[in-house]
Length: 284
Image 1 (cartoon, rainbow, N blue to C red):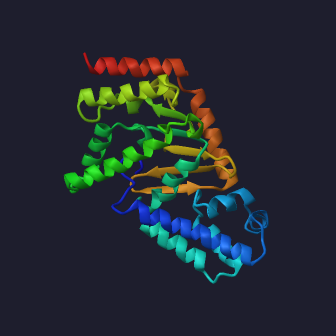
Image 2: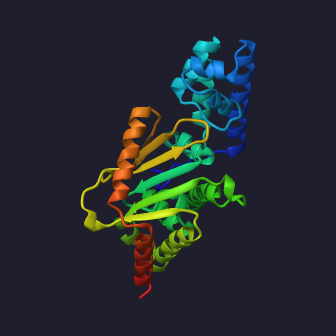
Image 3: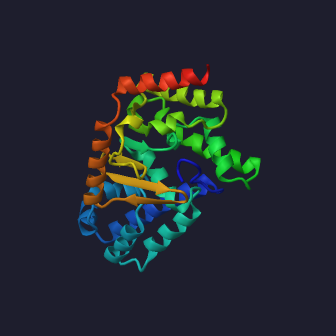
């Protein structure tokens, strides 16, 4: 689960080079066929800009897209094989690899988590405790590696140039701020971190109170990602599985569910006040 682990031991460098090679091969075979990015996009049912992002290793194709590229470019399964191999080599678990990479190119991320603070916004001690109890047979070094990978993902909203950061809108259930993970002080520090991100305008934060009762995402978590030159995608997960969704109808339905959820949540100011209050209570 992304809230807990979602990573496996592997090297980032070789994997990133592999996707750059995929993009270079795509450009080579496209040009060999005399196609522009826009031409190829029409043939595989996406935009020319999306083809450009694939060629520059900004976006990763789903297996179905890779197979369609092979069909159009007559590459005898080359891109499908490369896609499968690179997914297997990802430093993240298969179910989370594509979502983790898409975070880096998203212009906006909206996320709901019902039970834990979302991975992007976890403190080191909070993430360590979650992984420690979820994976009791891992060594301390292995846990540290998982935590380091989790912390590295926060670079998307700590970049020096604010213009390059995605807009982040985070909605969490009240359970996520009241369940004590680690010591009381460690949990208070996690809540302090959310307050800091909110007050620095790094994120928009809302809390769905217990008093809201049933709501549109009560049975699951959700991450929605929007991009400058590509269609939006959604990601949902549970323990040891996850699903990336790019079907426009399904994504639109999940976007509506998120909107319905936030309508039942506290306002931004009320949410910030509640998080501060819970943090204060942990220290008394």
